[in-house]
Length: 405
Image 1 (cartoon, rainbow, N blue to C red):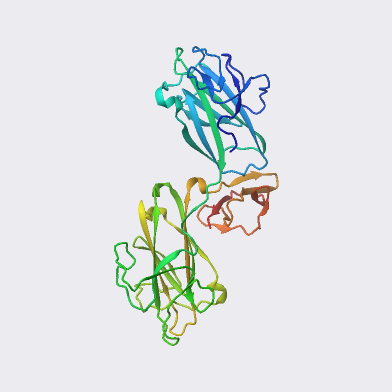
Image 2: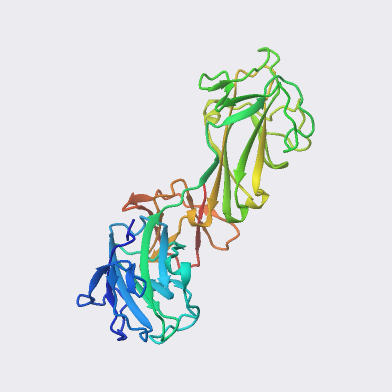
C-alpha cells in the first residue's frame, strides 16, 4: 500500500485557483493537513473542509517514496469521490472520473451529481505502467462539485502497487489424466466431449519411466516392444478470454509430442507431417540434455474459450526399444498489465534499453524492418529492479521488442 485509505492529505479549500499545483515542484507547505475522509455535509468526515457549496474545486496532494521506478508495473486505485475527480501522478493525468473531456478549469462542474449510496461507494481503477519516479512521487487530485448549490463533498483514496504475474492455468507438476497401456483411444480422444474409460489413470507430472526423476511411473510395455504412444488430458478454466493478451505453452518431452487445445492442434514437435496415428514413431530419439530441456511456444489466445478448456497431448517414442519416456507441461496466460514495458533512451553514442526484473526470461530482439527479428545476444545487466542492455547507436532505424518466455 503506497497510500492508505484514511491517510493524511494536504488540501486547499479556500476557493483559490493555484498555478502548477499538480507538479512535483509546487510548494504545498502552507496547505492544511488532515486525514481522509475529507469533506463536508455528510457527517462521516475525519477532516471537515470549508462548507462552501459555491466552491467548484477542492485540491489535494500527497507524496510517497520509491527507491525503484520499476518496482510496480501497475497501480490499483480505490476511490471515494463526490462528485467528479481528476488525478495526476508526477504532473501527468492518470485518471478522470465523472468529469468532461477537454481542458479542466477551476470552474468546471462535474457532469453528474453523486447522491445516496454512491456517495459512500468505493470505485476501483487500474493504472498500467504508471509514470513513477525514483524518490518522491506526488499524487495530486482535484475534486469538482456538480453545481453551485451542492450540499456535500467527499474524498478518500487508496493506492496500491502491484506486479501482475502470469496465471498458471496448468502448473508444472500438475495432475494429468493419462492412458499408458498402448491402446488407441479413438479419433476424438483430444476433444472435450470424449468420455474417458476406466483404463485412464490420474497422476502428477513429471510422468515417465527410465530416468529416475518421475513422480508418476508410466507403463511402457516390454523392453523390446515399447508402447509407441501415451495420451494425456487436462482441463483448466478461463474466466474471460478477452482479458488474455498472451498465452505460452512450456513443455518437457521425450521423444515426440503433439498438443491440442480445445480440439485444435497447437504444437507438433519431433513428429512427422500428416496424420498422426497410435503407431506413428517420433522422428528422432531424444538425448540426455534434450530430455531435461523445457521448450516454449506462444499460443494464439483466441483459441481459449470462456469456462472449461481442454488441453490434450500425445507423447510418442522413436523406437520399440526406447529406454525412457518423459512428460511435463505448463500453460501460462498473461493479462495485458502482466506484460513488461520496454523503455529506451539514447546518448550520442549508445542506445540504453531496459525492462523490469519482475519479468525474467524475456528475450530482447531487434529488427530494421519489423519483419525479420534477431535475438540481441548482449547479456543484460541487472540492478535497481531492472534489466539493462547498452548497445552502440546506429544511424539506421532500429526497432526493439521483448519476446515472452
